[in-house]
Image (cartoon, rainbow, N blue to C red):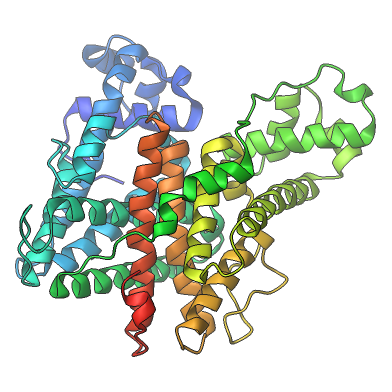
Length: 470
């Protein structure tokens, strides 16, 4: 990723240590392994770090600097006369590239250590400087964008710092979600050019909405249903959390159907932690302490196991969506139904983080409508089809004729926002935060990201008073 010519030996060593830790685990970080990765002698490494533990102790701070410097460098190459919106687009592409360039260590870069602690993220969400260069720069860019549109940003101005913080957090979540889905999720199966085009369209949609809001000095407020969203979904989903998986000692003596359930459950844990690669079958066998030959007698092959695991989890999530929707009054507006589905998605990630990760990693179904009218089709998993069909219904209610591209990009943007904050809060940078703070962050993100989509539909010339204030 980096042009390391001229970099200090210490930086080169830490870069190598990050790669070793990301690919082989932190236990693999030794003077010898890092020396081999860096192309240095063990003696040269030992002159900077006596042990692997010394390197690991410095990695969290190094990763913070690494990300911030990458973002600052991306912004530095823009012409001076570029608008805040242009800079925001460039930062989004840089963050996306940071995630895309090194998929082998994505989980380590984005899940191992928290980028911000609770105090700093609260400052960030309020629009206050946290002392983290990357986060502070993002706040400055959004504030500049607002001021370029004629808005006064102040506690008693047109737009408050709190609103700037809320918007910046939502932008981060949408971009993070696009990166997450593109590196380890379903979008990874698309061509790189398509992934980049998706990102630009989603980013442009958000930036255009921000420009409109800043010019008119009106920032959308949360829907009343979001005050009750947590209680609604928790009431449906209960309180039982994901339990650690323990492989049974008598797996090979179990009834085949029971053994199959155990194997599928193990495959979910493997997919959630390691993703899905060519050695997926081997990893599942190792997790269960058995052989690939035995697995093949129960689930046939690697493909069949992946398919069974994906079907199980996507149907589970779809059932959660349907149950949460069924708990709403029959006359609940579609806009509120969509946000309850987003809340259910978020809560699923909080309650079952490994299962949530496995859904992302195992995803292989289609997400692109092809009927001409934006409707779902049989090639889609049921959980995604529910989201897309609700979004399509929302489009129709606004008086707009749905098309495949319109519904696809709108659904992708809503999904990216929900996915980004769900990943950050379940196993990413915010995983150690308390539940109340996580939900507060979620509500902020969904309010901004969803209504950026609503605004993009209004651009088509079909403004509707009911949705202008949502």
